[in-house]
Length: 332
Image 1 (spheres, rainbow, N blue to C red):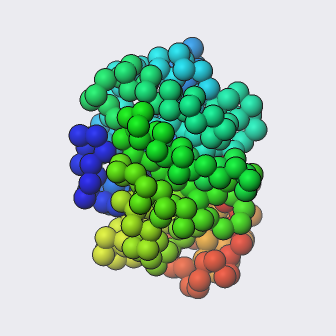
Image 2: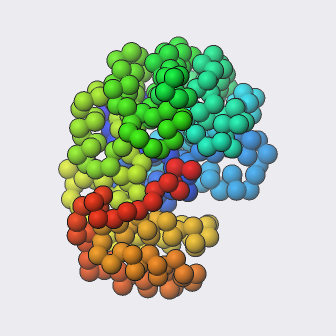
């Protein structure tokens, strides 16, 4: 256990903030399974500033189960980011996370996301300003990458600058902005960052299985491991990491049904299709199930398909070897 600000973190296994995935229903499931933290997907500071309706939807959370509630903001303008942090805190955010890692062009061209890696001074100034805006009760954390590209690896310099500015914890994805989500994550740099600062460090990248998480946690010396792809379709990974059992077929089906029903309360049905693809990884005849659900647009029909496919079966083989599933949508 360790603390982020005043908040005690009871598990070293975190759900990564992922676009279209880290909405309230899935975050709550992750917490129930034992995740120590489940941060929201990146939320636009300007969207909060202008009270955008879609942005307001992203701010929904469960105050009883999401403890602490960590909200991730992105933006390149200090004034808008400070305003958004204050508003988020008023709405219940207990930790404010700054996205300094998103590699997507529409984010970086506004000076946000990975663009902040190119200006250490501006990044540190942003942390300091947001800390002053929200006060000591709401810690500011940051998610970064190793650098902009292979010629500009600066995560150690960035980590020290952020720590000096008052950052409460840093999550490091072990890839550069230029890599996107290709290649391999550099866990030696994550280990080096942990050794160079005093604040908690969360390692991120290529954590697919229970074995991956345990090995990387031990070898890096990190305070926590952030799991993205490994949790897609498998929120039970957090329970297994804490010594719990794999789900039974009925338990799996019931959770998928619950997740689907809560999702469609506020989202379009078709936006859950990616989750059904991920939930079906490793199953026999998964391709036929995916083909079926991609053409369903009625809630009752989807529920019937889920019940028929998941009620009496479990994954049969190594999902990474037998099931080629595209995860890129979640990392936007």
